[in-house]
Length: 187
Length: 438
Image 1 (cartoon, helix red, strand yellow):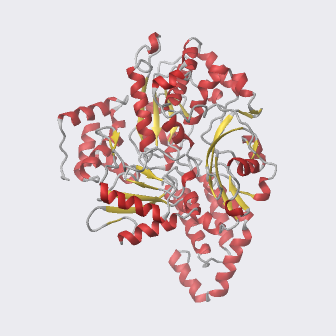
Image 2 (cartoon, chains in turn yellow, orange; image 1 turned 180 degrees about the vertical axis):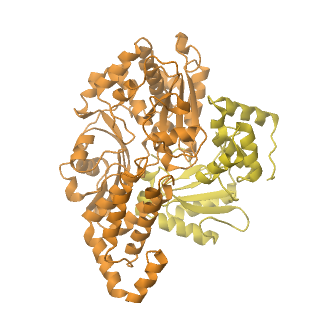
Image 3 (cartoon, chains in turn orange, yellow; image 1 turned 135 degrees about the vertical axis):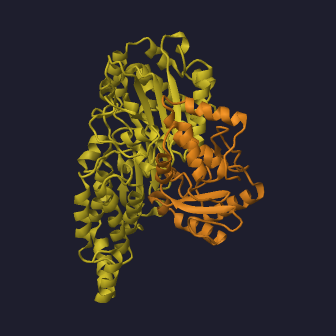
């Protein structure tokens, strides 16, 4: 990953398309921050400058968005970022055991990155998957009805398959996901 | 034994290709929209008013009345926003609609846009819902390609643009004015009302914000008539709704039920009863921001706006969280207080600071380090939050706190007593210092 942003012609076309989706291009600040994050892994100063130039906002205004919205990362996260839901429905059904499993397996605390850079995890608030609790989100894919064994199997499968679990704003689609786990919900 | 309920929203959900236009049309999709194209805007609004449909996002406001607030002759453009920022703990119904039946959502939005002469509509999806976002985004794309969106839709003189937008992880963006701020590329901090969105909304234009499920209900109403819809459920709150249930039940999930269905029947019949044969202890009836009911409270209470209101709670976003008798209520309320403390947007001091302090006090009670005056202190702080903030976040955050304390006081008192007997005065002074309450 590079520290400076550069785009192919196709990507530049996509960026213009995003800006054209709104009556005012300032609305594109949020999707373009996702674009920058997709390229750099987290939001850097140069990312903030780039977005502010693209949408005509001051850099401080764009920085406000980065600090307000939790899905913009202000420091690097792992290649696979595990977010374990900790809110009531998940907590009632054992989200703590899931968190403990992840913590013990990776040897890292919430908001830390593993030494090899492959994993990071954090406890997050309700992800809207309460009927399939406990659950977690890895990058942009939900994994539901978890047990410590099941999250273990999922992490094994990720280490083996190295799948793309991210939502790409530039390609406007979600990665292929894990072979034996559907991306759609188990609702 | 389960009761038969009407299927307004969930009729074809088991069809795996329902998200594709051809399948949707083959099952009668877009018929309601075509009917609406031949109607006058005022007629559409009248039909929705007649149906008695009330908003499914949490406030239960009559949808037709909300639509009628939009000016009929103004130089300014009108916009429609579909609020799919679904973040209320316990709620996950809009996700189901966007994943399985995004065309229904789009059709509802088109009919609403005809009624309010909206030129552009927006779907604000919470950022974490990547798959529902992708499904709905692809459905919009297909609608553009096939002439259901864009210029002169299906050869009519109605043109309409639709944009789907991803949030980025802020609960408060489900509040309609915060949502508009966010959509304008700003921090999602609520605006003062008035002015109301119908007069001054997104980019200052006339705007109506409806919940995703509300909009998805509209095609059925137009197709079958407002009167037919008003006969389902109960008169004061007609229709069906997607009820989410989670927590200590055997069959958590989403069930479409008629309004007015008894809470206890729903838990027993649809949700398969309490796990492990345990006893019911408490129910959060409408998303975490509603007054908690005890098992006793639930007797004779039905799931509809008026019955839940009479029981001292609210229907909220139709999301029930069930707790059995193994639940420690001091831990449950601590969990919720962490949520609200984390999600406060930070704009108003009572909510930002008060929510944070309440969490700290709940934390020390749960750890058996509380003080005799703590419950009084929490009530006092709650009193300073409620009614003193720009949006309803502060008002609703205190509802679960106060009701859980009131209804399960013994558990709090027992833990506080335990701490008083096990801690020396010196220890408690040290704790006070740590909490900054000296």
